[in-house]
Amino acid sequence: MRKVIISLAPVEAGKPIDKEALVSDVEKCAQAGAAMCHLHCRRPDGSLTEDTTELVDTFERIAEKTDLIIQASTGGVSAMDIRQRCEPLNYWRVESASLNGGTTNLGEAVYINSFEDIRYCARAVYERGIIPEIEVFDIGMIYNICMTKEQVPYRDPVLYNLVFGHRGGMQPNIECLTAFRAAVPSDALWGVTHYGRDNWDFLAAAIAMGATVVRIGFEDSHYLAPGRQAVYNYEEVEKLAALIKAMDLEVATPDEARRIMHILSKV
Image (cartoon, rainbow, N blue to C red):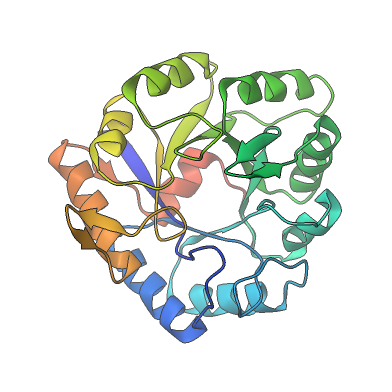
């Protein structure tokens, strides 16, 4: 039976972080079916930083209580350059990391990821035995990765995270999902993120079309049901796990997710 990986992105951008509450919520998310936890490197006030102190402490607390895959972000709109954005890769527990596939508009901001940035990040993750999750905001970014593969060898299977919903990027409708899915190389894995999500239809469609990874959590949306916002991330994980099971599929455990993603042992 096909297994679907639930990826948790639990921190809303720009909001102060209550670390103890976050760790407690993430632990419940793991119990509800999450297999991976995605965090940006942030200060306690929620702003992005290259200082990994808070990130490391948070992931250490999460690792004490769960077996979740540790995934660090190398992105986010900020004044940091790619070397600063890649600082979290030096934390030994990081098993997976985002690798952004190109430049796009995110609302009024310009999110810059040059070809040199892509190559730098790709080398940085593979040198450390980390598996990249390639974030693509439009179809052209898939071809960016195909082009950079000629210069920086990527380890198969490549995992693409198709990101929908940002102003300036692909929108969460079936037409865009179908086009995006058609552009993913046949030997690659793919997943989906629905930023600003206000329904569950799009995630269900992606699962039905073969998504290996589905991301959920407050980084993207608090939406739980019409007229209802989730108070905790684990509420969203519970609903997504129930949706996956209702489709006669299985929720991947962290170890199953590691095998699917071909994550190398960090022990």
